[in-house]
Length: 469
Ligand code: SAH
Ligand code: SF4
Ligand code: F3S
Image (cartoon, rainbow, N blue to C red; front, side, top):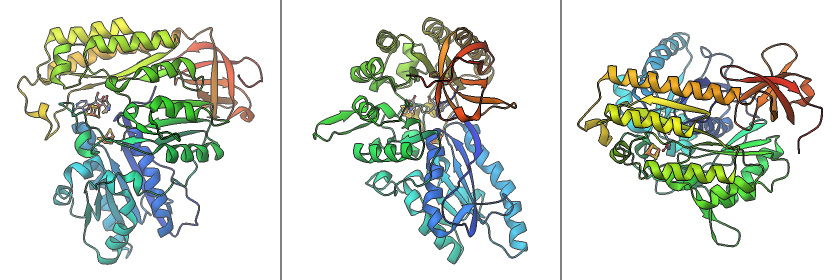
Protein backbone atom coordinates (compact mmCIF):
# COMPACT_ATOMS: atom_id res chain seq x y z
CA UNK A 1 0.00 0.00 0.00
CA UNK A 2 1.03 3.60 -0.24
CA UNK A 3 -0.20 6.96 0.84
CA UNK A 4 1.63 7.75 4.06
CA UNK A 5 3.76 10.77 4.59
CA UNK A 6 7.48 10.46 4.98
CA UNK A 7 7.44 6.85 3.98
CA UNK A 8 8.68 6.99 0.43
CA UNK A 9 12.16 6.16 -0.75
CA UNK A 10 14.17 8.33 -3.09
CA UNK A 11 12.83 8.67 -6.57
CA UNK A 12 14.49 10.12 -9.62
CA UNK A 13 11.54 11.84 -11.20
CA UNK A 14 10.73 11.72 -14.86
CA UNK A 15 10.50 15.49 -15.26
CA UNK A 16 9.48 15.76 -18.86
CA UNK A 17 8.47 19.25 -19.90
CA UNK A 18 7.39 20.79 -23.22
CA UNK A 19 10.24 23.01 -24.55
CA UNK A 20 13.30 21.35 -26.07
CA UNK A 21 15.80 21.28 -23.20
CA UNK A 22 19.10 23.06 -23.50
CA UNK A 23 20.17 22.23 -19.96
CA UNK A 24 19.85 18.95 -18.13
CA UNK A 25 18.00 18.77 -14.81
CA UNK A 26 18.08 15.74 -12.53
CA UNK A 27 15.67 15.70 -9.59
CA UNK A 28 15.94 13.34 -6.63
CA UNK A 29 12.94 13.29 -4.29
CA UNK A 30 12.63 11.90 -0.77
CA UNK A 31 9.76 12.06 1.69
CA UNK A 32 6.05 12.48 1.28
CA UNK A 33 3.77 12.73 -1.75
CA UNK A 34 3.80 16.48 -1.37
CA UNK A 35 7.52 16.48 -2.10
CA UNK A 36 6.84 14.42 -5.21
CA UNK A 37 4.25 16.99 -6.28
CA UNK A 38 6.56 19.89 -5.42
CA UNK A 39 9.39 18.36 -7.46
CA UNK A 40 7.12 18.45 -10.49
CA UNK A 41 6.27 22.09 -9.81
CA UNK A 42 9.96 23.02 -9.48
CA UNK A 43 10.66 21.33 -12.82
CA UNK A 44 7.73 23.37 -14.24
CA UNK A 45 9.16 26.71 -13.07
CA UNK A 46 12.65 25.81 -14.36
CA UNK A 47 11.44 24.84 -17.85
CA UNK A 48 11.36 28.46 -19.12
CA UNK A 49 15.06 28.71 -18.19
CA UNK A 50 15.72 25.87 -20.61
CA UNK A 51 15.94 23.04 -18.10
CA UNK A 52 14.60 19.65 -19.08
CA UNK A 53 15.32 16.06 -18.06
CA UNK A 54 19.05 15.26 -18.03
CA UNK A 55 20.16 12.20 -19.97
CA UNK A 56 22.26 11.06 -17.01
CA UNK A 57 23.11 12.20 -13.51
CA UNK A 58 26.77 12.67 -14.51
CA UNK A 59 25.73 14.90 -17.42
CA UNK A 60 23.27 17.05 -15.46
CA UNK A 61 23.72 20.84 -15.45
CA UNK A 62 21.65 21.00 -12.32
CA UNK A 63 20.84 18.43 -9.64
CA UNK A 64 17.92 19.24 -7.39
CA UNK A 65 17.55 17.32 -4.12
CA UNK A 66 14.09 17.56 -2.59
CA UNK A 67 14.60 16.47 0.98
CA UNK A 68 12.71 15.12 4.00
CA UNK A 69 13.43 15.91 7.65
CA UNK A 70 10.78 13.79 9.34
CA UNK A 71 13.14 11.26 10.94
CA UNK A 72 16.88 11.35 11.51
CA UNK A 73 17.63 8.72 8.91
CA UNK A 74 15.56 10.56 6.32
CA UNK A 75 17.59 13.74 6.66
CA UNK A 76 20.96 11.95 6.79
CA UNK A 77 20.30 10.71 3.25
CA UNK A 78 20.90 14.24 1.99
CA UNK A 79 24.47 14.38 3.21
CA UNK A 80 25.47 10.98 1.91
CA UNK A 81 23.98 11.88 -1.49
CA UNK A 82 25.78 15.24 -1.45
CA UNK A 83 29.09 13.48 -0.84
CA UNK A 84 28.54 11.44 -4.00
CA UNK A 85 27.45 14.49 -6.02
CA UNK A 86 30.50 16.48 -4.97
CA UNK A 87 32.68 14.01 -6.87
CA UNK A 88 30.53 14.40 -10.00
CA UNK A 89 30.49 18.18 -9.68
CA UNK A 90 34.28 18.27 -9.42
CA UNK A 91 34.63 15.95 -12.41
CA UNK A 92 32.43 18.28 -14.46
CA UNK A 93 34.38 21.33 -13.28
CA UNK A 94 37.62 19.62 -14.39
CA UNK A 95 36.02 19.22 -17.84
CA UNK A 96 35.09 22.93 -17.88
CA UNK A 97 31.37 22.32 -17.20
CA UNK A 98 29.20 23.50 -14.31
CA UNK A 99 26.86 21.39 -12.16
CA UNK A 100 24.52 23.45 -9.98
CA UNK A 101 23.55 21.65 -6.77
CA UNK A 102 20.25 22.79 -5.27
CA UNK A 103 18.82 21.55 -1.97
CA UNK A 104 15.08 22.05 -1.47
CA UNK A 105 12.45 20.62 0.87
CA UNK A 106 12.24 20.19 4.60
CA UNK A 107 15.94 19.69 5.44
CA UNK A 108 16.66 22.91 3.55
CA UNK A 109 14.01 24.68 5.61
CA UNK A 110 15.18 23.23 8.93
CA UNK A 111 18.93 23.54 8.45
CA UNK A 112 19.22 26.49 6.08
CA UNK A 113 22.75 27.89 5.97
CA UNK A 114 24.05 25.01 8.13
CA UNK A 115 23.88 22.86 5.01
CA UNK A 116 26.59 25.06 3.52
CA UNK A 117 28.81 24.52 6.53
CA UNK A 118 28.68 20.77 5.99
CA UNK A 119 28.60 20.96 2.18
CA UNK A 120 30.06 24.30 0.99
CA UNK A 121 29.88 23.16 -2.65
CA UNK A 122 26.05 23.47 -2.61
CA UNK A 123 24.83 26.39 -4.76
CA UNK A 124 21.18 26.89 -3.82
CA UNK A 125 19.25 26.18 -0.59
CA UNK A 126 15.53 26.84 -0.63
CA UNK A 127 12.61 25.99 1.62
CA UNK A 128 9.20 24.72 0.47
CA UNK A 129 7.65 28.19 0.54
CA UNK A 130 10.19 29.64 -1.92
CA UNK A 131 9.80 27.42 -4.98
CA UNK A 132 8.41 30.22 -7.11
CA UNK A 133 11.76 32.00 -6.59
CA UNK A 134 13.83 29.06 -7.82
CA UNK A 135 14.43 30.40 -11.38
CA UNK A 136 15.77 33.69 -10.04
CA UNK A 137 17.97 31.90 -7.49
CA UNK A 138 19.36 29.52 -10.10
CA UNK A 139 20.04 32.41 -12.46
CA UNK A 140 21.89 34.22 -9.66
CA UNK A 141 23.90 31.13 -8.72
CA UNK A 142 24.76 30.49 -12.37
CA UNK A 143 25.85 34.11 -12.92
CA UNK A 144 27.73 34.99 -9.81
CA UNK A 145 28.77 31.75 -8.21
CA UNK A 146 28.50 31.57 -4.43
CA UNK A 147 25.53 30.10 -2.63
CA UNK A 148 22.00 31.57 -2.69
CA UNK A 149 19.66 30.83 0.21
CA UNK A 150 15.94 31.40 0.74
CA UNK A 151 14.16 29.79 3.66
CA UNK A 152 11.79 32.63 4.53
CA UNK A 153 8.20 32.01 5.47
CA UNK A 154 6.43 34.66 3.40
CA UNK A 155 3.19 36.12 4.74
CA UNK A 156 1.23 34.67 1.81
CA UNK A 157 1.21 30.98 1.03
CA UNK A 158 3.12 29.58 -1.91
CA UNK A 159 -0.23 28.86 -3.57
CA UNK A 160 -0.40 32.60 -4.28
CA UNK A 161 2.85 32.51 -6.21
CA UNK A 162 3.34 29.29 -8.09
CA UNK A 163 2.03 29.31 -11.64
CA UNK A 164 -0.42 26.60 -12.71
CA UNK A 165 1.19 23.16 -12.94
CA UNK A 166 2.10 22.49 -16.55
CA UNK A 167 3.03 18.87 -16.94
CA UNK A 168 0.50 16.09 -17.40
CA UNK A 169 0.72 13.51 -14.64
CA UNK A 170 -0.95 10.57 -16.36
CA UNK A 171 -3.87 8.43 -15.24
CA UNK A 172 -3.36 8.93 -11.52
CA UNK A 173 -2.53 12.44 -10.42
CA UNK A 174 -1.70 14.28 -7.21
CA UNK A 175 -3.08 17.70 -6.42
CA UNK A 176 -1.89 19.71 -3.43
CA UNK A 177 -4.80 21.56 -1.84
CA UNK A 178 -3.43 22.30 1.62
CA UNK A 179 -0.04 22.76 3.15
CA UNK A 180 1.43 23.20 6.58
CA UNK A 181 0.38 22.32 10.08
CA UNK A 182 -0.65 24.21 13.20
CA UNK A 183 -1.00 21.16 15.41
CA UNK A 184 2.49 20.90 16.86
CA UNK A 185 2.58 17.26 17.85
CA UNK A 186 5.44 16.88 20.32
CA UNK A 187 7.60 14.77 18.01
CA UNK A 188 7.05 16.38 14.62
CA UNK A 189 9.07 18.82 12.49
CA UNK A 190 6.35 19.58 9.94
CA UNK A 191 4.99 22.77 11.59
CA UNK A 192 8.54 24.12 11.52
CA UNK A 193 9.42 23.05 7.99
CA UNK A 194 6.11 23.65 6.24
CA UNK A 195 4.77 26.53 8.28
CA UNK A 196 1.19 27.32 9.23
CA UNK A 197 -1.82 25.64 7.68
CA UNK A 198 -2.82 27.19 4.37
CA UNK A 199 -5.56 26.11 1.98
CA UNK A 200 -5.53 26.61 -1.75
CA UNK A 201 -8.66 28.39 -3.00
CA UNK A 202 -11.45 26.10 -4.27
CA UNK A 203 -11.56 27.71 -7.71
CA UNK A 204 -7.82 27.06 -8.26
CA UNK A 205 -8.15 23.46 -7.07
CA UNK A 206 -11.12 22.81 -9.37
CA UNK A 207 -9.37 24.42 -12.34
CA UNK A 208 -6.29 22.27 -11.84
CA UNK A 209 -8.42 19.15 -11.37
CA UNK A 210 -10.28 19.84 -14.63
CA UNK A 211 -7.01 20.32 -16.45
CA UNK A 212 -5.55 17.11 -15.01
CA UNK A 213 -8.64 15.20 -16.14
CA UNK A 214 -8.45 16.82 -19.60
CA UNK A 215 -4.83 15.59 -19.71
CA UNK A 216 -5.96 12.04 -18.98
CA UNK A 217 -6.20 11.69 -15.19
CA UNK A 218 -8.92 9.27 -14.05
CA UNK A 219 -7.92 9.37 -10.39
CA UNK A 220 -6.89 12.38 -8.32
CA UNK A 221 -5.39 12.21 -4.86
CA UNK A 222 -5.77 15.46 -2.96
CA UNK A 223 -2.69 16.19 -0.89
CA UNK A 224 -2.03 18.10 2.29
CA UNK A 225 -0.11 17.62 5.53
CA UNK A 226 -3.54 17.91 7.13
CA UNK A 227 -5.65 17.59 4.04
CA UNK A 228 -8.95 17.38 5.88
CA UNK A 229 -8.24 20.74 7.51
CA UNK A 230 -8.75 22.23 4.02
CA UNK A 231 -11.25 25.06 4.02
CA UNK A 232 -12.35 27.52 1.43
CA UNK A 233 -15.27 29.36 0.00
CA UNK A 234 -17.95 28.09 -2.33
CA UNK A 235 -19.26 29.96 -5.37
CA UNK A 236 -22.12 30.98 -3.06
CA UNK A 237 -19.61 32.73 -0.76
CA UNK A 238 -20.36 30.21 1.98
CA UNK A 239 -17.50 28.56 3.88
CA UNK A 240 -16.66 25.14 2.50
CA UNK A 241 -14.91 22.14 4.01
CA UNK A 242 -13.19 19.21 2.32
CA UNK A 243 -16.52 17.36 2.00
CA UNK A 244 -17.92 20.10 -0.25
CA UNK A 245 -14.73 20.24 -2.29
CA UNK A 246 -14.95 16.49 -2.85
CA UNK A 247 -18.56 16.83 -3.98
CA UNK A 248 -17.58 19.54 -6.49
CA UNK A 249 -14.75 17.38 -7.80
CA UNK A 250 -17.14 14.47 -8.18
CA UNK A 251 -19.08 16.54 -10.73
CA UNK A 252 -16.11 16.51 -13.14
CA UNK A 253 -17.03 14.04 -15.89
CA UNK A 254 -14.46 11.24 -16.39
CA UNK A 255 -12.93 11.65 -12.95
CA UNK A 256 -13.53 8.11 -11.71
CA UNK A 257 -11.71 8.14 -8.41
CA UNK A 258 -11.00 10.67 -5.67
CA UNK A 259 -8.70 10.11 -2.70
CA UNK A 260 -7.21 12.42 -0.10
CA UNK A 261 -4.23 12.11 2.21
CA UNK A 262 -3.08 12.67 4.98
CA UNK A 263 -5.89 13.34 7.38
CA UNK A 264 -5.89 14.16 11.05
CA UNK A 265 -8.51 12.62 13.36
CA UNK A 266 -9.27 16.07 14.78
CA UNK A 267 -10.44 17.34 11.39
CA UNK A 268 -12.54 14.29 10.46
CA UNK A 269 -15.88 16.09 10.48
CA UNK A 270 -19.37 14.68 10.08
CA UNK A 271 -19.79 16.06 6.54
CA UNK A 272 -16.69 14.27 5.35
CA UNK A 273 -17.81 11.01 6.91
CA UNK A 274 -21.22 11.41 5.25
CA UNK A 275 -19.52 12.09 1.90
CA UNK A 276 -17.84 8.69 2.17
CA UNK A 277 -21.28 7.12 2.16
CA UNK A 278 -22.70 9.28 -0.64
CA UNK A 279 -19.98 10.12 -3.16
CA UNK A 280 -19.32 7.05 -5.30
CA UNK A 281 -16.03 8.44 -6.65
CA UNK A 282 -14.61 8.81 -3.14
CA UNK A 283 -12.62 5.62 -2.69
CA UNK A 284 -13.37 3.43 0.33
CA UNK A 285 -9.89 3.73 1.75
CA UNK A 286 -8.70 6.16 4.38
CA UNK A 287 -5.25 6.80 5.80
CA UNK A 288 -5.89 8.19 9.26
CA UNK A 289 -2.85 8.33 11.53
CA UNK A 290 -3.52 7.56 15.19
CA UNK A 291 0.13 7.18 16.35
CA UNK A 292 -0.67 5.36 19.63
CA UNK A 293 -3.40 3.42 21.38
CA UNK A 294 -2.60 4.90 24.79
CA UNK A 295 -4.37 8.02 26.02
CA UNK A 296 -1.37 8.88 28.17
CA UNK A 297 0.95 8.83 25.14
CA UNK A 298 -1.57 10.64 22.92
CA UNK A 299 -1.68 13.43 25.51
CA UNK A 300 2.13 13.55 25.72
CA UNK A 301 2.18 13.71 21.93
CA UNK A 302 -0.22 16.69 22.00
CA UNK A 303 -2.40 14.93 19.43
CA UNK A 304 -5.59 16.61 20.59
CA UNK A 305 -7.65 13.40 20.42
CA UNK A 306 -7.92 10.31 22.57
CA UNK A 307 -8.51 6.67 21.74
CA UNK A 308 -12.27 6.95 22.23
CA UNK A 309 -12.48 9.77 19.68
CA UNK A 310 -10.57 7.69 17.13
CA UNK A 311 -12.84 4.69 17.78
CA UNK A 312 -15.94 6.88 17.30
CA UNK A 313 -14.67 8.18 13.96
CA UNK A 314 -13.97 4.66 12.71
CA UNK A 315 -17.39 3.42 13.82
CA UNK A 316 -19.12 6.31 12.02
CA UNK A 317 -17.04 5.79 8.88
CA UNK A 318 -17.86 2.10 8.84
CA UNK A 319 -21.54 2.84 9.30
CA UNK A 320 -21.44 5.31 6.38
CA UNK A 321 -19.35 3.10 4.10
CA UNK A 322 -19.21 -0.51 5.29
CA UNK A 323 -16.46 -1.56 2.85
CA UNK A 324 -14.09 1.22 3.91
CA UNK A 325 -10.56 0.01 4.63
CA UNK A 326 -8.24 1.83 6.97
CA UNK A 327 -4.59 2.52 7.24
CA UNK A 328 -2.69 4.50 9.82
CA UNK A 329 0.67 5.67 11.13
CA UNK A 330 2.14 4.55 14.45
CA UNK A 331 5.13 5.64 16.48
CA UNK A 332 6.65 3.31 19.05
CA UNK A 333 8.93 4.53 21.81
CA UNK A 334 7.73 8.13 22.15
CA UNK A 335 9.33 9.54 25.33
CA UNK A 336 7.46 8.20 28.34
CA UNK A 337 5.92 5.21 26.51
CA UNK A 338 5.74 2.27 28.93
CA UNK A 339 5.21 -1.39 28.12
CA UNK A 340 1.59 -0.94 29.18
CA UNK A 341 1.16 1.96 26.75
CA UNK A 342 2.65 -0.12 23.97
CA UNK A 343 0.31 -3.02 24.74
CA UNK A 344 -2.60 -0.55 24.47
CA UNK A 345 -1.42 0.25 20.92
CA UNK A 346 -1.38 -3.46 20.03
CA UNK A 347 -4.87 -3.78 21.52
CA UNK A 348 -6.20 -0.88 19.45
CA UNK A 349 -4.69 -2.37 16.28
CA UNK A 350 -6.34 -5.73 17.02
CA UNK A 351 -9.65 -4.03 17.72
CA UNK A 352 -9.77 -1.84 14.60
CA UNK A 353 -8.05 -4.06 12.02
CA UNK A 354 -5.99 -2.21 9.42
CA UNK A 355 -5.58 -2.96 5.73
CA UNK A 356 -2.08 -1.52 5.91
CA UNK A 357 -0.07 0.88 8.03
CA UNK A 358 3.22 2.65 8.46
CA UNK A 359 5.00 2.28 11.76
CA UNK A 360 8.11 4.02 12.95
CA UNK A 361 10.52 4.11 15.86
CA UNK A 362 10.38 7.47 17.56
CA UNK A 363 13.24 9.59 16.23
CA UNK A 364 14.23 12.66 18.25
CA UNK A 365 14.13 15.75 16.04
CA UNK A 366 16.12 18.79 17.17
CA UNK A 367 13.90 21.67 18.23
CA UNK A 368 10.76 19.60 18.88
CA UNK A 369 9.41 19.37 22.46
CA UNK A 370 9.71 15.58 22.69
CA UNK A 371 13.42 15.66 21.83
CA UNK A 372 14.26 17.10 25.23
CA UNK A 373 11.55 15.29 27.20
CA UNK A 374 12.22 12.93 30.08
CA UNK A 375 11.70 9.19 29.65
CA UNK A 376 13.50 8.60 26.36
CA UNK A 377 12.99 4.93 25.51
CA UNK A 378 16.14 2.80 24.99
CA UNK A 379 16.83 1.85 21.37
CA UNK A 380 16.58 -1.89 22.04
CA UNK A 381 13.07 -1.46 23.48
CA UNK A 382 12.01 0.58 20.47
CA UNK A 383 13.38 -2.09 18.13
CA UNK A 384 11.50 -4.85 19.88
CA UNK A 385 8.24 -2.89 20.03
CA UNK A 386 8.48 -1.95 16.37
CA UNK A 387 9.05 -5.56 15.38
CA UNK A 388 6.08 -6.76 17.39
CA UNK A 389 3.79 -4.08 16.01
CA UNK A 390 4.93 -4.62 12.44
CA UNK A 391 4.34 -8.36 12.70
CA UNK A 392 0.77 -7.71 13.80
CA UNK A 393 0.20 -5.09 11.08
CA UNK A 394 1.68 -7.35 8.40
CA UNK A 395 -0.64 -10.16 9.48
CA UNK A 396 -3.60 -7.80 9.27
CA UNK A 397 -2.58 -6.65 5.80
CA UNK A 398 -2.22 -10.26 4.67
CA UNK A 399 -5.64 -11.10 6.13
CA UNK A 400 -7.18 -8.08 4.39
CA UNK A 401 -5.65 -9.10 1.05
CA UNK A 402 -6.69 -12.73 1.53
CA UNK A 403 -10.23 -11.52 2.22
CA UNK A 404 -10.37 -10.11 -1.32
CA UNK A 405 -9.93 -13.54 -2.92
CA UNK A 406 -13.14 -14.54 -4.68
CA UNK A 407 -14.47 -10.95 -4.83
CA UNK A 408 -15.18 -9.01 -7.96
CA UNK A 409 -13.17 -5.80 -7.58
CA UNK A 410 -13.12 -2.73 -9.86
CA UNK A 411 -9.56 -2.11 -10.99
CA UNK A 412 -8.35 1.07 -12.65
CA UNK A 413 -5.64 -0.15 -15.03
CA UNK A 414 -2.68 2.18 -15.16
CA UNK A 415 0.06 0.32 -17.02
CA UNK A 416 1.71 -2.88 -18.15
CA UNK A 417 2.45 -5.57 -15.57
CA UNK A 418 5.86 -6.99 -14.84
CA UNK A 419 5.36 -10.06 -17.02
CA UNK A 420 4.54 -10.27 -20.71
CA UNK A 421 0.83 -10.01 -21.43
CA UNK A 422 0.04 -8.60 -17.98
CA UNK A 423 -1.63 -5.29 -17.20
CA UNK A 424 -1.69 -3.75 -13.75
CA UNK A 425 -3.74 -1.27 -11.78
CA UNK A 426 -5.13 -0.53 -8.35
CA UNK A 427 -8.14 -1.73 -6.43
CA UNK A 428 -10.33 0.81 -4.60
CA UNK A 429 -8.26 -0.07 -1.51
CA UNK A 430 -4.99 0.85 -3.24
CA UNK A 431 -3.81 -2.73 -3.64
CA UNK A 432 -1.82 -3.32 -6.84
CA UNK A 433 -3.73 -5.85 -8.99
CA UNK A 434 -2.42 -7.64 -12.05
CA UNK A 435 -4.22 -9.70 -14.67
CA UNK A 436 -3.51 -11.10 -18.13
CA UNK A 437 -5.20 -8.65 -20.46
CA UNK A 438 -4.84 -6.35 -23.46
CA UNK A 439 -3.02 -3.03 -23.16
CA UNK A 440 -6.09 -1.37 -24.66
CA UNK A 441 -7.68 -1.59 -21.19
CA UNK A 442 -5.07 0.74 -19.67
CA UNK A 443 -6.95 3.84 -18.54
CA UNK A 444 -10.19 1.96 -17.95
CA UNK A 445 -11.78 0.66 -14.79
CA UNK A 446 -12.79 -2.99 -15.12
CA UNK A 447 -14.09 -5.67 -12.77
CA UNK A 448 -11.55 -8.31 -11.85
CA UNK A 449 -12.27 -11.60 -10.14
CA UNK A 450 -9.53 -11.87 -7.53
CA UNK A 451 -7.90 -15.30 -7.58
CA UNK A 452 -4.87 -14.89 -5.33
CA UNK A 453 -3.44 -12.60 -2.69
CA UNK A 454 0.33 -12.04 -2.59
CA UNK A 455 2.36 -10.14 0.03
CA UNK A 456 1.71 -6.68 -1.42
CA UNK A 457 -0.60 -7.30 -4.34
CA UNK A 458 -3.51 -9.26 -5.80
CA UNK A 459 -3.95 -11.14 -9.04
CA UNK A 460 -7.02 -12.33 -10.86
CA UNK A 461 -8.87 -12.53 -14.14
CA UNK A 462 -10.89 -9.98 -16.07
CA UNK A 463 -14.56 -10.60 -15.51
CA UNK A 464 -15.72 -9.21 -18.81
CA UNK A 465 -14.73 -6.51 -21.24
CA UNK A 466 -16.96 -3.70 -20.14
CA UNK A 467 -16.44 -0.53 -18.13
CA UNK A 468 -17.70 -0.65 -14.57
CA UNK A 469 -20.59 1.51 -13.63
N1 SAH B 1 0.09 14.98 9.29
C1 SAH B 1 0.11 13.61 9.50
C2 SAH B 1 1.48 12.94 9.44
C3 SAH B 1 2.68 13.65 8.96
S1 SAH B 1 4.26 12.95 9.30
C4 SAH B 1 -0.50 13.33 10.87
O1 SAH B 1 -0.69 14.20 11.65
O2 SAH B 1 -0.75 12.22 11.20
C5 SAH B 1 4.11 11.25 8.84
C6 SAH B 1 4.31 10.29 9.92
O3 SAH B 1 5.65 10.25 10.30
C7 SAH B 1 3.56 10.61 11.17
O4 SAH B 1 2.23 10.21 11.11
C8 SAH B 1 4.34 9.87 12.22
O5 SAH B 1 3.85 8.57 12.39
C9 SAH B 1 5.75 9.81 11.63
N2 SAH B 1 6.65 10.70 12.36
C10 SAH B 1 6.63 12.04 12.41
N3 SAH B 1 7.62 12.50 13.21
C11 SAH B 1 8.27 11.41 13.68
C12 SAH B 1 9.37 11.24 14.56
N4 SAH B 1 9.97 12.27 15.13
N5 SAH B 1 9.77 9.97 14.81
C13 SAH B 1 9.16 8.92 14.25
N6 SAH B 1 8.11 9.02 13.42
C14 SAH B 1 7.67 10.26 13.13
FE1 SF4 C 1 3.15 16.54 12.38
FE2 SF4 C 1 1.17 16.35 14.09
FE3 SF4 C 1 1.11 18.20 12.19
FE4 SF4 C 1 0.81 15.62 11.57
S1 SF4 C 1 -0.57 16.87 12.84
S2 SF4 C 1 2.09 17.10 10.50
S3 SF4 C 1 2.17 14.62 13.01
S4 SF4 C 1 2.54 18.11 13.89
FE1 F3S D 1 9.26 14.88 5.07
FE2 F3S D 1 8.68 17.41 4.91
FE3 F3S D 1 7.06 15.62 3.86
S1 F3S D 1 9.62 16.41 6.62
S2 F3S D 1 7.33 13.93 5.24
S3 F3S D 1 9.12 16.03 3.19
S4 F3S D 1 6.48 17.49 4.92
